[in-house]
Length: 246
Image (cartoon, rainbow, N blue to C red; front, side, top):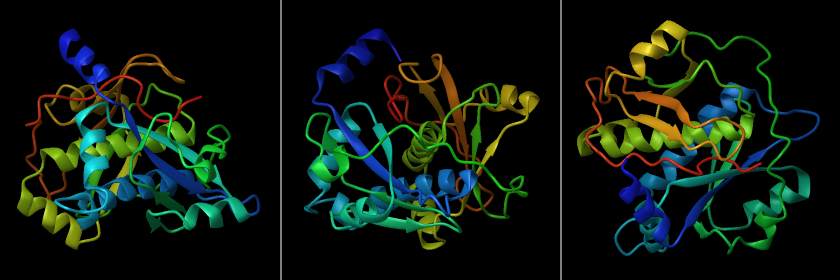
């Protein structure tokens, strides 16, 4: 992206897509499941009929996607989670994780029940190594050189899923949606990452304002069923202050 394009994005009204992950003290979700559930949550709102045409979220979704695709992940438990659940949005369930995604809000216009939630502290672990990528799942490959909090990684996985959605054909989008958005988030092997990051597949670039240095964070790869030969058709790849804030 050229500096002029970056300046143009910054000149537009800035919106953020809020995501809230449920983290109860006694039963926190597994890290990989939380990342995958966050990515599916982003896809669910992108595909929701309320986000298109005359839908109630359509204007906010358009304004958000016309600027930077900022996402912020906050955490909630107990009464906080119940209050968040009362606001308009979509809750997505994984095996152990619950993530609620909300229509975009202005950077300085968060609903109070979301604004009061914490961003820091989303430090999750996997009780066991993630298994093999399921057949038919799209792949979101994390940069193996980065050490990100779960919240930051959830936002980056959401960015990757969104770039994959943008680059897909409409028939592939519909097939992916009907299948329940099967996807897997995995950390790439260093040698594989070198190939992936120069392959022409959709890649998320972070400007390094929070947690990590500027650079590539996620490469999105379609499955054999949905966009397997996908290459980046959308030339404007968002970079900058993306993901969770610290």
